[in-house]
Length: 88
Image (cartoon, rainbow, N blue to C red; front, side):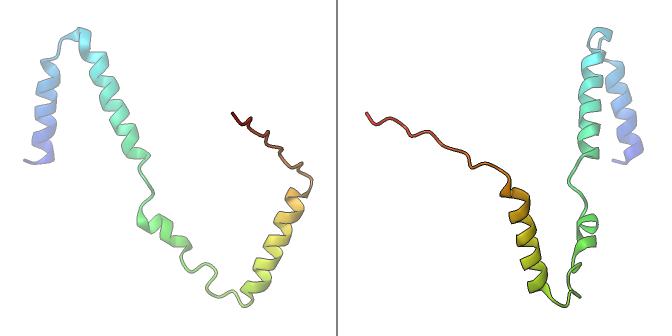
């Protein structure tokens, strides 16, 4: 069945739905369409970053600098104390 035929069948089916239920049908179709728009990114979108660090000459220095920056960023945070559970 072609997409044009399917659209016609959908119109026919919607035409048979009582007016009091049209809002529900609209909500379902609208929700479904929004879900399609929010699907996971296509592989080509995600793959645009593949190999981004491939030409990096000194990855070890980069990694060490990144770790140092993280330590500095979190240095001012106070440690969270976890209360001890009472033993029964």
